[in-house]
Image (cartoon, rainbow, N blue to C red; front, side):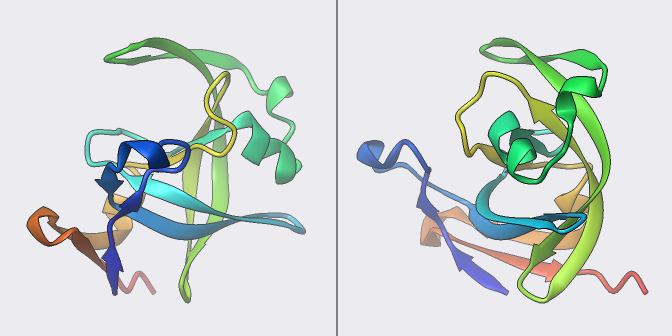
Amino acid sequence: MKYSYSLLPGLEKTGVLAPILPITFIHKKAEFPTFALIDSGAEQGLISTIIADELSINWRNIPKSIGYTTSGQFIYHSYQDIICSVDDYKFKMNINIAEGISPFKCILGRKDIFQKAIITFEGYKNVFYIEFRDLN
């Protein structure tokens, strides 16, 4: 599937284009459609506490951990087996729920989306391709 790079949510005024993927998170009876940055530098997927709240995930009762980025530390809570839907492809992944980040921030990284698909970036064309693996 071919996707065009898009403006980063919340940073539209900068004009910065990035590989952004439409995704829906599913937890029990709740669904939350959003956009995720495909980040080969991120180890694991991450969502904000706002998204977790919308999915009725009780993240406050999950033990805290400390994560590190180039810009400092952050507090997160690890959640197992959230269901994700991209186009017609559904898969489970583990996700980190990060405190204090932009309300609708979502990142997919090496331990999740990159394990499920072949991803090809053509930055000079501002497009990327995702070919999901048949895991059945």
